[in-house]
Image 1 (spheres, each protein chain N blue to C red):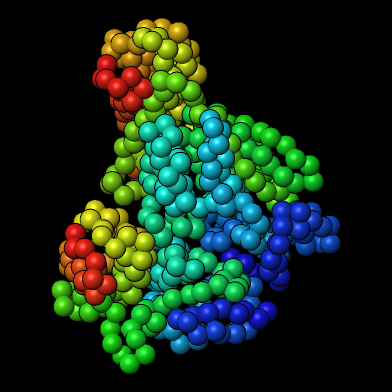
Image 2 (spheres, rainbow over the protein chains, first blue to last red):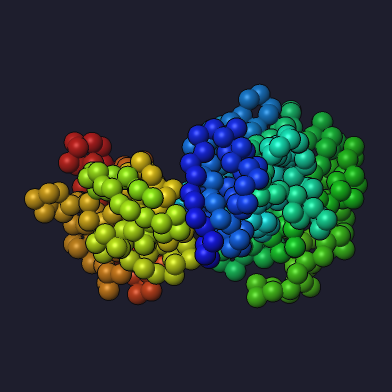
Length: 289
Length: 161
């Protein structure tokens, strides 16, 4: 796997890491945060591994309505974050916990997830629903929507010489609720047959803002913006949620694999969207639909 | 390259290659309690504590552990051979069958009990879920961890759950 690696470099700061990654000395450097189970395909050509675990990117914080997760923070930190557990009825810790086991979560980072292009994570679906912006630092700094990582054209959006340093999102204010719904072969299966995240912000009886994302059984998670618009600025009731959810199946292109057929995934998408919207409403309003 | 680590409270220096995994190094240096399983980060058989957190040593590079502390199953018992309450409870409760996954189970349990001395049954199940026992003996290890937790609390004069 690492046939070409000759050097292991300990970056002492982000600047130091970027300098090493960007050095044009004939080497092929690759950033690593700890474990390599998600980025093994990137390591085949690497000649130098740049360890960024000591760079100060392992934070998880909520300041006001802004949440920020450092690229080298591990999933278990997200699960254990008191602040995140109190935000949006614990959506992100629940989504992070859906990935595998504590041993795996202790060494899984968002930098590795996007660098290794591992798109099945429930956490990615949740972050997509929150309109997460990713700060990518290379020779230049740029802030890109997480969604842009998932389009075919941008699959290689994160180069070897760059680091996804920060994942930030704004939490909705006021009466807001969120829900993660997933179906998997077993409770502990890290890869869902399908996962759905809904976030609802309510103003009185009306939906001020809706966000719906679907992932797990798709090539990459997607937002169902058509459905979001159908909910927006309308009084939310069971009939509206049912009619909107029924259209989910037509808006996704799931895969067929060992976990389930595309047809099955389409069937359950409508059910999961309905459940997610109902639970998000319940959290937002304190009562069921 | 030279690797400086503290294993089971003993400072150690090893020569290693940048591509050696932590599992490679530990096995080579005689820590045979660390077992080789899937070598893919899936089964938890090779789990060790790295700075107090369980990791699958087969997918962590040894170089990443520079200046860090590592605990293996060999480090749990006292120098005089007195077993750690988790080890004793696994014996008393019949928590080990073939024994191959037992180091991973016990170290996962230690991570849990170090942070949460009063775990519920669900906490224990969650903590052990990263280690696959092919004897399928999960019930007794769970009982053993709960017994050990009570034993540790009692020894500290704490409250029982």
